[in-house]
Each structure stands twice: as structure tokens, then as C-alpha cells.
Image (cartoon, rainbow, N blue to C red; front, side, top):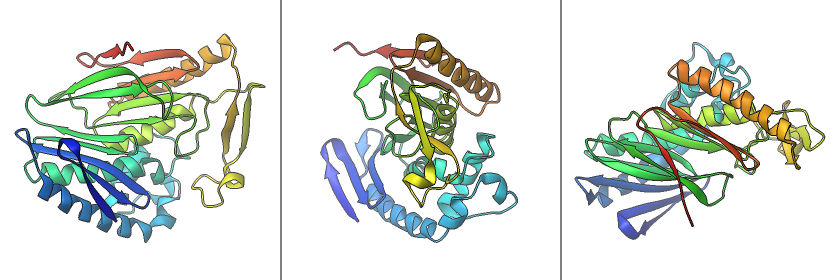
Length: 281
């Protein structure tokens, strides 16, 4: 495990599969000692999860009625929140690590916490604190929108899923960014909503997940491997399907908002007070 201090009072944690940028402040003052302790907490959580990986890779309905400690205890309810029976707790792993790290720091007096775990974010903003987030229209791309999140708006996490992401997708979305009360729920629902952009098209190629990764948690599902040029009708259909699911989850109070991107087209479904502005370069 490596902890690398960064400019602006941030700490970069490099611990194998967890590569996390941590920023914690109390009344505008960085908290380096607490961030170092949070890094040790991350190592403990990772060790704990490794022992529970067989359970974490099972669909969430198989685990109903079971109780788990630490990070898996955060991942399981987030997977359940999608209401999709194919989802496993692994769909929320990055967001759950970010959440637990953010909670650790907030419980030690931080008034502004931002955790970036490979693009999955947990935020803890108290009082008048705020954070300006960049949103890309492609996973791994440069931000093309900015969203200002303020304390009291209920946003505790954001996550993006889609093509070229760290995990498999069933859909054709370039990016789906979800805003939710926790990082774990945002992570799980971003994956789920991105999956709902799946369409049948000659431009879309798919393979069994296990043929690409024998250790995957979704071995029997067909995942997207390539998407060529879609027709306008296909793009609209993918966006329609994702919007329908997003509105359902918003109506249930599961998520707060979503930004959908498919081949140059977008739809923004954001609650009052949370606005997205294009970034002009």
C-alpha cells in the first residue's frame, strides 16, 4: 500500500484494486493525519472483503436474509436497490469503499469530504460547503459538463458506468452518471441503468462474460464488446429505455438524478437545485 500526498491537501491511496484520491477538510483546513488513518481503514476493509468474495459475486437475491460486516454490508443493499435480480454486490464495490472512507472522515469532524475511487465518488458536505464535479460524455473522457453540489441537497455519491468502463456493461451507453444519497447506490444504479441501454442492432457485438473474464461475477450474461455507428432510432431507443428506468428509480427515491449519453446525444434528468452547465473549451 502506498499513500502519496498530493497538492491541495489531498492524499492518493494506491492499494492494489483500490486507487483512491481523498480530500478531507475541517472548516477549510486539510486533515492529513485523519486521511492517513482512513488509508489504513481502507486496507482493513479490503482484507475483509477478499475473504467474502464468493458471496459478493452471487446475485443479491441469493443473499437475502444474510448479514455481512464492513464493505459487503454496504454493497449488498446497494445492489438490492436496483431491483434487478442479476445484479451482484460487486456492482457497488467502488462506491462502497468510497462511502466508508468518507463516513470515517466525516465522523472525525470533516466538514467537506470528497473521495474519488476510480471515478466513483462519495461526498460529505456540511453546511454551506460545496463541490463542483466534472461529468464526461464518455467513460474516461474529459469533462464536458459541470455540476455544482451543495451541502443539504442530499447528494452523497455519484458514479458513471458505460462502454470502456472498468467493469462489463450490457448496454450501448457511452456514459451514465447517477447522483444518489450514497456512493454505493450511485455505483450500483449507474451500472444497472447503463445495462438498460441494451438494444439489438447489427452494430452491437456481444460475448458471454465468462469468455472474457473467467472470474467475472456475471459469467452467463452477454456483455457488450463493441458498438459501431447506431442509427438515430437506435440511439433514441437506448435513451428511452434508460430514461424510463431512471425515472422509475427517481420516483422510488432510490436515486436523485441521472445524465445519459449515447453517441453524441444526451438526456439530463436532474432534481430542482441540481443543475448541469456545459463546459466551453
